[in-house]
Image (cartoon, rainbow, N blue to C red; front, side):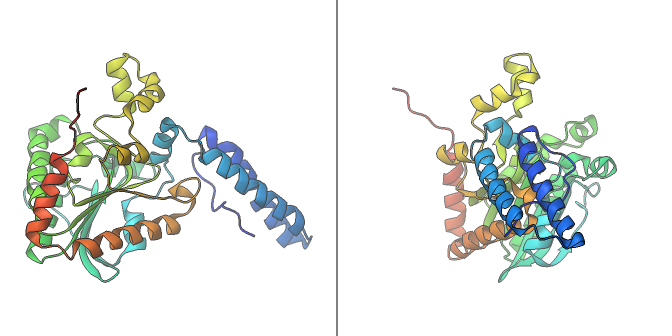
Length: 326
């Protein structure tokens, strides 16, 4: 007998509340049974079955906007959570050797299964103080330049590259523009397209605009089930099209920004399933599933020559965005 309730979430989304309340009740009954010695096994089994059925019902009918909300869930696992669970012997490396260190990026050298890799990704914060320190996962130019430095290190030592994407976009501040934000992103696009080592990209939360694409050119693009990936956020799209960002849910439906949409459009290569209810319900299971997906792709890519990797990668992105007029 199992219950999906792991902890008290800081935020419960509106459509999650019936599930959360039932799971909370199960947890409370278990605690009461343990403390009082009263046997509630029959009632608990019935409630667990009901909770499982309710979770299936709620999470099997999610709209695109609800998936966007899950991708932004503040209890969702972030880059560091995945690195800690997927890798061993992680050595974090700092600084871009041009300007400074960007706390919005976490990256370094690690081992994943039998592979020694370079791994990096955007990192959000869990509270106001940490979010300010991490700049809400929005990279400055020095963040993209540090990512490039790490990738060049991977090329030097012939290591695969793993990129984890979770950002609302590149930082749009004046300082970032003065230090060459657009150039830093463009440089990464150019350099990543011709790197002679395997690159596996995985979208683990939000994948917004050039902020995501700046570390998003890879041989394989994986995407967790409840994520979004688009040139603009639903709020930004609604503000442009309808002059009203409150129509974000309408924009999300029109934009086709979910994993299933992008797989159908051949923008991504594989959807990584999440625990029922989203990755925030079970960090370990989410990380294990993603790790298996990454290792599976590394096994395939490791058999390709540097020339094959580069040619296939360039062709992959060159094919995106075409259409046929009838």
